[in-house]
Length: 348
Ligand SMILES: [Zn+2]
Ligand SMILES: [Zn+2]
Image (cartoon, rainbow, N blue to C red; front, side, top):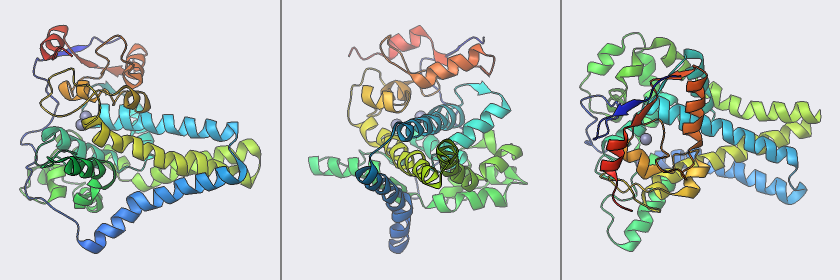
């Protein structure tokens, strides 16, 4: 079992320097916004509606619930433990096979590749609730109506201001053989700024190659539950039900729960630690996201592998990392010192 490493009083995420500049602000053009909106929200919503239709027609069986729960858990582990705590924050180190597994499980959630997700998230932490934060519900929003719009934006629309989503993968492909040039570039477009947040990963060619197979992993997220449903029931109808519950419905639910960290996680809940932003602790979000909902805790100590700073705060993602450490599969598991925690408390 590895020893936890204490973080300094002012938490330091292993973010590179210089941090991505909040300027210039880029937006997609009108027609492209509609296309991206349809792809990111419309298609998953249609998939969810297929589940509602199936439920109204045939109800839901125990096996459907099991597949939905299992696929939710697998992809949420990929997002929270893999993409968030390993790739975006490097709160622990792990073996290469396990890192590949986290990359694949997180990609199956269909929220962008591990490196794109990490770049967006590192940008969020570099400018939390300030200009340059890609999905803050707060920016320039003072009236109640503004705040409602901000919440809606952070939950449903924020990616419309991230034109790099469609270009980032191609940029990585072009520079896979010579990432040093990409990291040293002074280009100011969003995808170059995103790339410069990832000096720890871009030189790792096998990892980048795995990352670039993102589309395959997304498809795997639908093929696996369909295969499981088909094999267990021995029928095509069973495969279709597996696809709907473990694939389509799971995809939409995991997406909305993850996006709720942007909206709910920065508006609804308690602030018990000084984090210099509007992040909140919210127990419902914490259970649904395997710990990310202790979002104020996380923003106060973003480099920490655990976010359960009170005995009653359940952090399933942190428990999994500790289990991996016990098994010798994770090390350099970082956590704040008791002194740093005490200094960060606000008294709530
Ligand atoms: Zn946040
Ligand atoms: Zn984070």
